[in-house]
Length: 217
Image 1 (cartoon, rainbow, N blue to C red):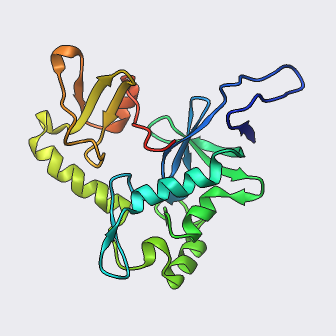
Image 2 (image 1 turned 90 degrees about the horizontal axis):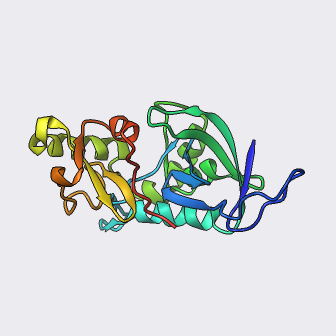
Protein backbone atom coordinates (compact mmCIF):
# COMPACT_ATOMS: atom_id res chain seq x y z
CA UNK A 1 0.00 0.00 0.00
CA UNK A 2 1.44 3.36 -1.02
CA UNK A 3 0.35 6.51 0.81
CA UNK A 4 0.71 10.06 -0.45
CA UNK A 5 -0.37 13.48 0.79
CA UNK A 6 -1.21 16.25 -1.58
CA UNK A 7 0.87 19.40 -1.47
CA UNK A 8 2.50 18.96 1.94
CA UNK A 9 5.72 17.58 3.36
CA UNK A 10 5.50 13.89 4.21
CA UNK A 11 7.15 12.45 7.30
CA UNK A 12 8.74 9.01 7.40
CA UNK A 13 10.88 7.05 9.84
CA UNK A 14 13.95 7.87 7.79
CA UNK A 15 13.69 11.40 6.45
CA UNK A 16 11.38 14.03 5.05
CA UNK A 17 9.79 13.03 1.77
CA UNK A 18 9.69 15.39 -1.16
CA UNK A 19 7.41 18.40 -0.68
CA UNK A 20 6.47 18.04 -4.35
CA UNK A 21 4.50 14.83 -3.74
CA UNK A 22 1.35 16.18 -5.36
CA UNK A 23 -1.69 14.36 -6.71
CA UNK A 24 -3.12 15.56 -10.00
CA UNK A 25 -6.27 14.39 -11.69
CA UNK A 26 -5.52 13.26 -15.24
CA UNK A 27 -9.13 12.44 -16.14
CA UNK A 28 -12.19 10.83 -14.59
CA UNK A 29 -10.50 7.51 -13.88
CA UNK A 30 -6.80 8.38 -13.69
CA UNK A 31 -4.62 10.28 -11.21
CA UNK A 32 -0.91 11.13 -11.10
CA UNK A 33 0.99 10.81 -7.82
CA UNK A 34 4.59 12.04 -7.79
CA UNK A 35 4.96 11.15 -11.44
CA UNK A 36 3.31 7.73 -11.09
CA UNK A 37 0.16 7.39 -13.20
CA UNK A 38 -2.60 5.42 -11.47
CA UNK A 39 -5.46 4.08 -13.60
CA UNK A 40 -8.33 3.33 -11.23
CA UNK A 41 -8.97 -0.40 -11.24
CA UNK A 42 -12.26 -1.81 -12.52
CA UNK A 43 -13.89 1.42 -13.73
CA UNK A 44 -14.14 3.46 -16.93
CA UNK A 45 -15.22 7.10 -16.74
CA UNK A 46 -16.50 9.24 -19.62
CA UNK A 47 -13.74 10.82 -21.69
CA UNK A 48 -12.91 14.48 -21.05
CA UNK A 49 -14.69 15.65 -24.18
CA UNK A 50 -17.60 13.24 -23.94
CA UNK A 51 -21.20 14.28 -23.38
CA UNK A 52 -24.00 12.08 -22.05
CA UNK A 53 -27.77 12.16 -22.40
CA UNK A 54 -29.82 13.52 -19.52
CA UNK A 55 -33.31 12.72 -18.28
CA UNK A 56 -34.55 15.94 -19.90
CA UNK A 57 -33.22 14.96 -23.32
CA UNK A 58 -30.36 17.43 -23.29
CA UNK A 59 -26.67 16.55 -23.39
CA UNK A 60 -24.49 17.26 -20.36
CA UNK A 61 -20.72 17.31 -19.97
CA UNK A 62 -20.38 14.00 -18.17
CA UNK A 63 -16.65 13.81 -18.91
CA UNK A 64 -15.95 17.14 -17.22
CA UNK A 65 -18.29 16.26 -14.36
CA UNK A 66 -16.40 13.01 -13.75
CA UNK A 67 -13.13 14.94 -13.58
CA UNK A 68 -14.65 17.47 -11.16
CA UNK A 69 -16.01 14.66 -8.99
CA UNK A 70 -12.62 12.99 -8.73
CA UNK A 71 -10.94 16.32 -7.98
CA UNK A 72 -13.37 16.87 -5.12
CA UNK A 73 -12.53 13.46 -3.70
CA UNK A 74 -8.72 13.69 -3.79
CA UNK A 75 -7.55 17.30 -3.68
CA UNK A 76 -6.39 18.21 -0.18
CA UNK A 77 -6.60 14.65 1.15
CA UNK A 78 -4.30 11.73 1.81
CA UNK A 79 -4.59 9.20 -1.01
CA UNK A 80 -3.57 5.54 -0.67
CA UNK A 81 -3.34 3.25 -3.69
CA UNK A 82 -3.14 -0.53 -3.66
CA UNK A 83 -1.16 -1.54 -6.75
CA UNK A 84 -2.76 -4.13 -9.04
CA UNK A 85 -0.04 -4.33 -11.69
CA UNK A 86 0.38 -2.30 -14.88
CA UNK A 87 -1.60 -1.88 -18.08
CA UNK A 88 -0.26 -1.86 -21.63
CA UNK A 89 0.48 1.87 -21.41
CA UNK A 90 2.76 1.65 -18.38
CA UNK A 91 0.14 3.00 -15.99
CA UNK A 92 -0.18 1.43 -12.56
CA UNK A 93 -3.60 -0.13 -11.97
CA UNK A 94 -4.77 0.74 -8.47
CA UNK A 95 -7.57 0.70 -5.96
CA UNK A 96 -7.21 4.16 -4.45
CA UNK A 97 -8.69 5.37 -1.19
CA UNK A 98 -9.08 8.49 0.92
CA UNK A 99 -9.33 7.11 4.42
CA UNK A 100 -11.82 4.25 4.20
CA UNK A 101 -13.47 5.63 1.06
CA UNK A 102 -12.84 3.59 -2.09
CA UNK A 103 -12.54 6.21 -4.85
CA UNK A 104 -13.16 3.64 -7.56
CA UNK A 105 -16.40 2.58 -5.87
CA UNK A 106 -17.59 6.15 -5.29
CA UNK A 107 -17.14 7.06 -8.95
CA UNK A 108 -19.33 4.12 -9.97
CA UNK A 109 -22.03 4.40 -7.30
CA UNK A 110 -22.52 8.13 -7.95
CA UNK A 111 -22.94 7.54 -11.68
CA UNK A 112 -19.68 9.18 -12.73
CA UNK A 113 -18.14 6.00 -14.16
CA UNK A 114 -19.05 2.60 -15.52
CA UNK A 115 -17.88 -0.65 -13.99
CA UNK A 116 -15.27 -1.88 -16.48
CA UNK A 117 -16.69 -5.40 -16.56
CA UNK A 118 -14.44 -6.39 -19.45
CA UNK A 119 -11.60 -6.48 -16.92
CA UNK A 120 -13.28 -6.82 -13.53
CA UNK A 121 -16.65 -7.41 -11.87
CA UNK A 122 -15.51 -5.78 -8.61
CA UNK A 123 -17.84 -2.81 -9.03
CA UNK A 124 -20.60 -4.49 -11.01
CA UNK A 125 -23.09 -4.58 -8.14
CA UNK A 126 -22.55 -0.88 -7.43
CA UNK A 127 -23.15 -0.11 -11.08
CA UNK A 128 -26.41 -2.06 -10.95
CA UNK A 129 -27.58 0.05 -8.01
CA UNK A 130 -26.58 3.32 -9.72
CA UNK A 131 -28.43 2.17 -12.83
CA UNK A 132 -31.58 1.41 -10.81
CA UNK A 133 -31.41 4.87 -9.20
CA UNK A 134 -30.88 6.60 -12.58
CA UNK A 135 -28.03 8.71 -11.22
CA UNK A 136 -25.39 10.47 -13.31
CA UNK A 137 -24.65 8.59 -16.52
CA UNK A 138 -27.71 6.42 -15.90
CA UNK A 139 -30.24 9.28 -16.27
CA UNK A 140 -30.86 8.11 -19.83
CA UNK A 141 -29.40 5.69 -22.34
CA UNK A 142 -26.01 7.02 -23.36
CA UNK A 143 -22.85 5.99 -25.16
CA UNK A 144 -20.24 4.10 -23.15
CA UNK A 145 -16.68 5.46 -23.15
CA UNK A 146 -15.35 2.40 -24.98
CA UNK A 147 -17.89 2.88 -27.77
CA UNK A 148 -17.15 6.62 -27.80
CA UNK A 149 -13.42 5.94 -28.22
CA UNK A 150 -14.00 3.32 -30.91
CA UNK A 151 -16.22 5.66 -32.95
CA UNK A 152 -13.75 8.55 -32.76
CA UNK A 153 -10.88 6.24 -33.68
CA UNK A 154 -12.67 4.82 -36.73
CA UNK A 155 -13.32 8.28 -38.17
CA UNK A 156 -9.85 9.72 -37.46
CA UNK A 157 -8.08 6.65 -38.83
CA UNK A 158 -9.52 7.27 -42.30
CA UNK A 159 -7.64 10.57 -42.73
CA UNK A 160 -4.50 9.86 -40.69
CA UNK A 161 -1.15 9.06 -42.35
CA UNK A 162 -0.80 5.27 -42.65
CA UNK A 163 -3.98 4.94 -40.60
CA UNK A 164 -2.16 6.07 -37.44
CA UNK A 165 -4.42 8.75 -35.89
CA UNK A 166 -2.71 9.67 -32.60
CA UNK A 167 -1.09 13.11 -32.73
CA UNK A 168 2.23 13.59 -30.93
CA UNK A 169 2.51 17.27 -30.05
CA UNK A 170 5.49 19.13 -28.56
CA UNK A 171 4.82 22.24 -26.45
CA UNK A 172 6.05 24.06 -23.36
CA UNK A 173 4.26 21.35 -21.35
CA UNK A 174 6.35 18.62 -22.93
CA UNK A 175 5.68 15.78 -25.35
CA UNK A 176 1.92 15.18 -25.20
CA UNK A 177 -0.14 12.92 -27.41
CA UNK A 178 -3.77 13.44 -28.34
CA UNK A 179 -5.94 10.45 -29.20
CA UNK A 180 -8.97 11.02 -31.48
CA UNK A 181 -11.29 11.40 -28.46
CA UNK A 182 -9.21 14.23 -26.97
CA UNK A 183 -11.06 17.58 -26.76
CA UNK A 184 -7.97 19.14 -28.37
CA UNK A 185 -7.63 16.62 -31.18
CA UNK A 186 -9.00 18.73 -34.03
CA UNK A 187 -7.04 21.86 -33.11
CA UNK A 188 -3.76 19.96 -32.65
CA UNK A 189 -1.52 20.08 -35.73
CA UNK A 190 1.43 17.75 -36.28
CA UNK A 191 4.66 19.38 -37.52
CA UNK A 192 7.02 16.56 -38.46
CA UNK A 193 9.80 19.04 -39.26
CA UNK A 194 9.71 20.13 -35.60
CA UNK A 195 9.94 16.58 -34.31
CA UNK A 196 6.23 15.98 -33.87
CA UNK A 197 4.79 12.72 -35.17
CA UNK A 198 1.87 10.40 -35.63
CA UNK A 199 1.38 7.21 -33.62
CA UNK A 200 -0.60 4.06 -34.33
CA UNK A 201 -1.40 3.35 -30.67
CA UNK A 202 -1.21 4.91 -27.23
CA UNK A 203 1.31 2.25 -26.25
CA UNK A 204 3.58 3.32 -29.09
CA UNK A 205 3.29 6.97 -28.05
CA UNK A 206 4.13 6.21 -24.42
CA UNK A 207 7.11 4.07 -25.39
CA UNK A 208 8.41 6.95 -27.52
CA UNK A 209 8.29 9.33 -24.55
CA UNK A 210 4.96 11.08 -25.03
CA UNK A 211 2.26 11.27 -22.34
CA UNK A 212 -1.49 11.76 -22.25
CA UNK A 213 -2.78 15.28 -21.44
CA UNK A 214 -3.89 16.16 -17.91
CA UNK A 215 -7.47 17.40 -17.98
CA UNK A 216 -7.87 17.98 -14.24
CA UNK A 217 -6.06 19.82 -11.48
